[in-house]
Length: 129
Length: 236
Image (cartoon, rainbow over all chains, first blue to last red; front, side, top):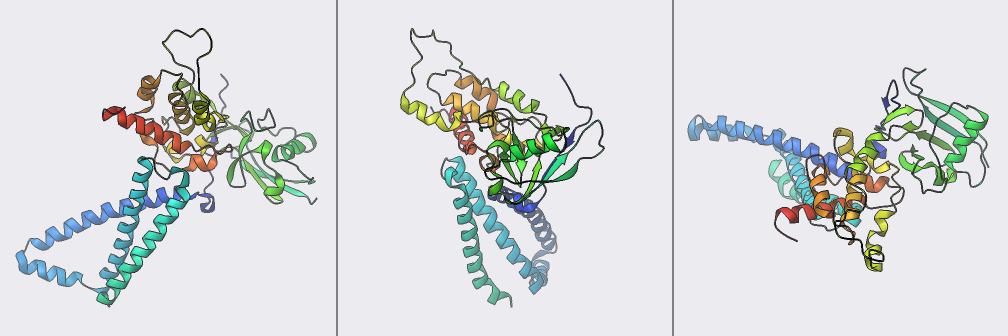
């Protein structure tokens, strides 16, 4: 069989040619990694805070309640909402529903994410500032 | 009609270190297809341009290319639908042999792996093996596959997993599983329900978006996943 001397791969790296389903997958991967990272950080911080007993824990919690970290927490909420809803989207496909309407299902996920995040902002923002 | 600007991905392993884009100004004409534009270059500008084609009517699957950001068949793509500037490159993420010709061997090797033919132990009946019109209608969509490789080239699981069977092979495995005359269900499930098979599909839908014959490959793969899960869980 003829084997070419040199083989080159050719990939399209422009973002505008990425279809919706692949955006869903990329975002799922990124939010998944962020959540793993957050979970480890969360366990580490809480464990360290508890070393000095209740007093130390309260001091740590007081220190963490500053506007910068609470604003970052909004990002955490958005990450959780998207990851959960897109996860449900994949489960739906695995059960055999909505495969022929995948673009609409993804649009629904984005709209629901926006709605729930909007409500979270409505509840949390007055509390932070 | 106005002139067409054609940008073609060129790479000759004997001459070039790196692939490059070459631009041609060509006369436009009503009803011209991308394949005809490539022929215009071949006949009047550069006889060294390499590309595959055969039937010119979207039934052989040889001329699948990456045209203006999508997987398309050059023979059935009207230039007028794409505007006056064309960007034509070989199927992405496949090894390029020369210019627009890619190495399709991995694709067909994986296709052969799932045994894409009738498996049956029973004695052939005197007349034909009967298939009802309803059963035939169910596999209609799947048998319109022309094995052009667009789905395979568009799948992120294929890009990152050398041993992944790919959308086309899995879709064909389901095509035979869904066929009432075929008795190889268990055998094909053994071949596909494993690490390099079904479970590498992450329902990204790139294959469905890329297919020039509008087949919903994800649906077929999902049906096969369902059968594999049912087998483990003791279902039907």
